Image (cartoon, rainbow, N blue to C red):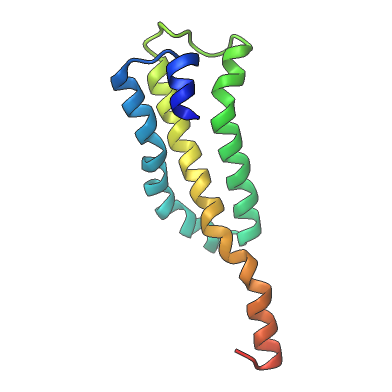
Length: 118
């Protein structure tokens, strides 16, 4: 979907598309470091909620802001750097959601400890 938006909504050049499509994996790499600290500081359920919210806001945000005329136009030099920044932020949030998937197993683990089946 990001490629469709880059082509038809943002009308980006090929080099700008490359930067935009690489921004989310860069966010994942940054998120590897950040998510561990967040899991230690907060519980996993809070981290997952904030990560999911962050991902949604930073993926949908630029489109909504553009439709409300609060985002740069297609010919602005600020468009690509802003889209890349939003992509990195959504990648960080996406990793927080993925890494919190162990949250589903926590009750099973607690049950096993309680009844000695671990």
